[in-house]
Length: 445
Image 1: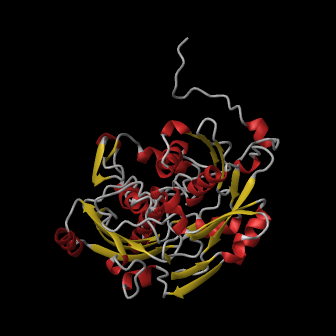
Image 2 (image 1 turned 135 degrees about the horizontal axis):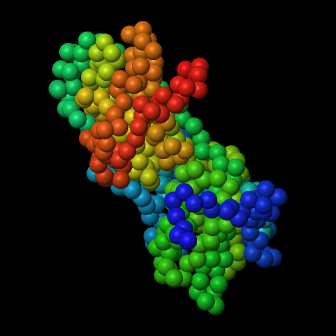
Image 3 (image 1 turned 45 degrees about the horizontal axis):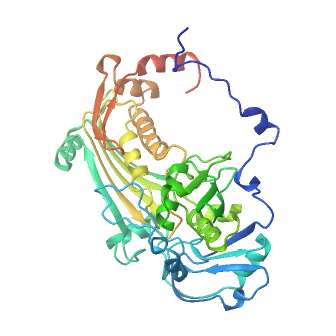
């Protein structure tokens, strides 16, 4: 009997323990008695310079074992004090910036990590964090795409106009597109805004680490979607060989993209502290921390200029996007590139041009999450289709059908380059048949 890998049902084995509450997540990892707990001092300001950090009131607090600011990190390992890695560079990302594990000189969003405390328990650690005194020089923040585009305030002094990246691609240049729009029998303009959303998996981020001095090995448990990436980052930043680091990912209570970013500051700080103290160290973020210190998604402004004929066929589609990537760009341009290339969906405009700018704001950074740019693109395209149908007084499904890539046209090259650097070529599909089956359900539109 030959087993087919595609289409063969695979029996799930994890359901019973997850449904009966016997799953094992990072916060359930109890390595043994004497586990220490970490807490993080986070910036209360969207934008500010750090004038001074006074930790004297914490150093002698009973139960506190360690207090770190950025100045302490270099003494442990020089790479630990460097900016966190820019995971996916891109030629268009001319001004990529990433945060430090602990802020150096300046904070650029509420929630940015400033100091790190390890104590006997989380209660003492949080009490200690509250005793740290920071002298701030508060700076005017850049909040929202309108302020970012104005360029009157800067998130990073060395990033002109807050523009981290600008990318243009398509099947027509600006002049050709303008001529096609002017010549089209009908033309519409749409301004569409997609609000930001927060990443909210049921389980927030968490990391536990144990250093074994006898074997010179580090064990790390972390709630991540990329255990091998975390392993490589921890080894590199702590000056260890890859073989000295084990990263264990227990059950993960949701990730959806936010936990594919790596390493988070705590995924470096917790292992470093475990090694420095020779004790097990544990960090579990609370819900507020996840909201301000992990990542967000979605926020974009989208301007669409479309020219079409009496049947609603797309003759020219010109799109401008402004993407709010927050204060840092660890995951490069994945989200706006996916929006700009996936926007077309099953349709085939005669001409397409898209330009986007990815802009800095003094807000939590953006990483891929739950569709990673596709919802924004789908929203822009389908709203455009509805607007064309309304303008012509035609059925919404007829306008869509007039623009479908036909079954005999596959493979179909959209003339774009996807986020992985490959040409955006569709291999197969039958969109007219799919629409017919949807319409057979009756009354859905």
